Image (cartoon, rainbow, N blue to C red):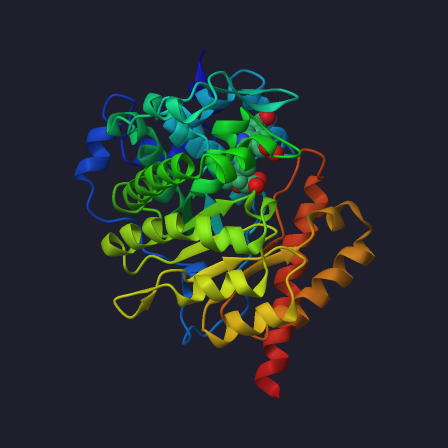
Length: 398
Ligand code: 1CP
């Protein structure tokens, strides 16, 4: 397949830096300095002194099937093939940055790339989503897992590098991984799930085996994120715990947070200044957030910010703001199916509530889906920026 014809946004960067498939790796490894940062709003949202004109905006799943230019590439390539080709992954990452004036690009990849390299046979199927041919059934299966061959993840760092070059400092670049619990859920359930009975059986019956896998995933995820920063040039990292809400707060604190702590600590030992955003989806309970806030290493927080969903309580928000951590979120993505009137109203209510802190990044409560319309997404970005600016101006006058 001639993938080169798809490299529209990236083309100029490749020509300018004389990058070819043959010399990409070598260019990355010998590269000295990225283009100067012109727009640093997302990174600045982790600092109290940042003089914002407005809050930064980006969206989870901003690259994906709702964009025609993504569908064009996907019509010809399998999902993991797009992730594994650094040129294509970078091109797809850049697509939403051409459509909208967003303040961050998140690298096009998937939380299942890491377990795929650890022995799980994973494919993404058209209507079903992820399908795992060899799920973990009993603790005896743990021995099938192995640390990834570091070589097999280099393509992610290559894609980050290309994206950072092409962004020319116009917005920040975010790296990510899945949280151990969410990745473990896929490894046991064999794909998407509604009831999560298999992973719950593991957690409560094969507790020791579960904790062993969670710890292994935590250590490998930390190495993976460190490399995304040091090798690829990611400026912020986000950890997606999409299925955090499947178990009660008590169990999340007892069984899941210890592995996350390992991940955070290992990461912060190597990248103390890179902001880390945690997304404990549907686990906004104040008790859980307080546990995260307690995690400190070398007098510095291990979690710098929280991606929050739309159900977050005022109590939880107060705790986060008091602890000087960053808030990211939290418009229900379904609102973007609505009329411009309701979209603008809900944005205004969100900003009124959340922009009371400087450390605020506008985002959705979870990801965009294939049925979102590009024009409504554009309205979200433009209106969020306009209203955030007005809010800021009003604040200065008061
Ligand atoms: O633009 C971006 O956000 C970057 C790309 C990205 C990210 C951050 C993708 C591309 N996936 C993810 C993270 C991810 N993957 C999560 C965490 C965020 C979330 O909760 O949405 C999860 C749970 C997955 C697992 C996964 N991979 C799913 C969800 C299935 C389920 O159980 O609900 C799906 C559909 C995939 C494949 C995938 N990953 C990404 C895309 C665009 C797609 C769809 C592939 C396609 O059909 O084109």
